[in-house]
Amino acid sequence: MMEELNSLLEPGMLVRHPDAPDWGLGQVQSNINGKITVNFEHQGKVTIIGSKVMLLLQHGVE
Image 1 (cartoon, rainbow, N blue to C red):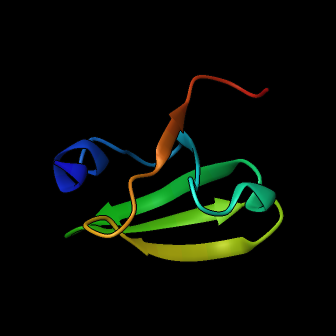
Image 2: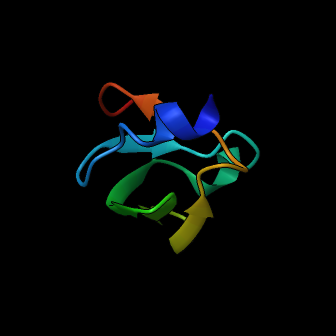
């Protein structure tokens, strides 16, 4: 299920990491074969394995 929802993420979408709220808001850079690269405001660029972490889609800047 996680992979299916994460597969909908596209470059430019805003997300948060559920286990690392201190990373802040992240912008999806790429989503290729279940590997999602996100640039987080307080952590920098991170590659997430979509089958391990369900990123939280944000609908704008809070």
